[in-house]
Length: 248
Image (cartoon, rainbow, N blue to C red; front, side, top):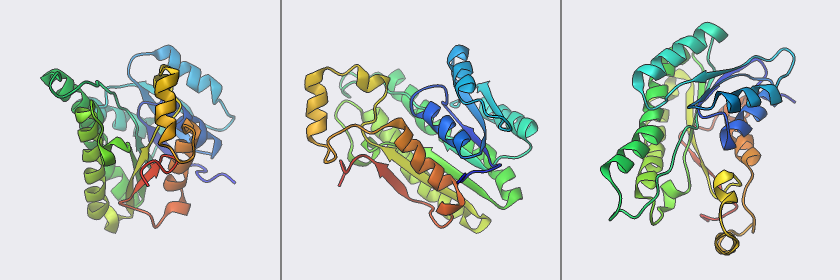
């Protein structure tokens, strides 16, 4: 059963990690996918090649989600190329971790602009076409750190907590237009970042996860597929944690 048949989705940060898993799952469920990448065209082309399916359009766009004008240009181009836009997944994000005592203004600003301002930028641009269609699903990628906080990640936690508040507000604003907005908050997911952890650190993290394993990017993508599909038609303004019961 293809839950997103003939839908058009825009996914930011889709060339690696959770973003690449999102592209793969959305295509698997019948969606046409536009996705962005920041710098590596080779990684973007690899994602396209790995997910090539007859009858499905996948296109990559180099774009900086933290730039308001770039976001406007991107959405206009996607609408021109695909004809409509049913789903937005704001996945682009970075970390610049350090204790607040050592954190520079640049490190604070960069994380807030990339993680939080980008959500404003893209949501702002997709609202009018979604309102015209009287339908839309927006999924913003948060983090359990935005719920629990984490030492050494004040900038990242603030950006992700901001996404949660933004999402709830937007869901209330746009509910009468049949536009849904939810946050997905991953816990520890197997990515390039977790691959770099030493064994002792991995064991310390795993000790606190009731399911005793890190999650998979595909498991985060599965939740996003559900929320983007008609099966999630009455779910809006929620924060769905994908964390193996870590925050329970």
